[in-house]
Length: 152
Image 1 (cartoon, rainbow, N blue to C red):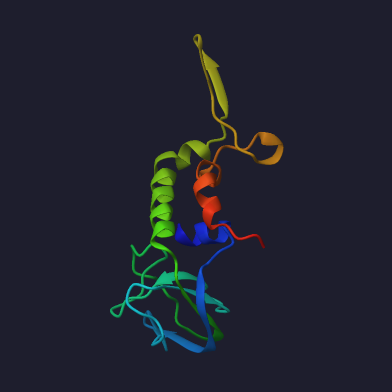
Image 2 (cartoon, rainbow, N blue to C red):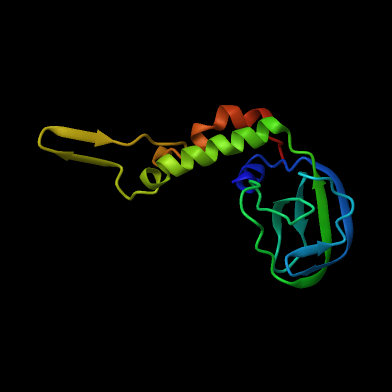
């Protein structure tokens, strides 16, 4: 979810980009000696492993630092950017993930309203095309996300 949030706000909080040749074998990227324990990083220019991950000496994890990253073996010339994502953004990403887990099925449902037996229900609409899109996490968390948004 963190990767989706960073893409949505057009801000990856890039600290330092490192251009070079990298090798991924057996789930290990080398070299990564420029990262510190728990730091997020972004791989770009890879064919199989582009994305945001968290560095740990004993193995990298996914963007939310939950599951072990499932890297595919490859050698590539690209960029690994050391990120400095503020803790508040990481916490906000966790809040969004919780919201998506709870309401994601409802938002993705094809039904926007229904009526039967004197009961009617209409789901909230977001700011999508014609104002008819379901209110997704982007709409629900817009005010909190705007503090970190970059204009591109």
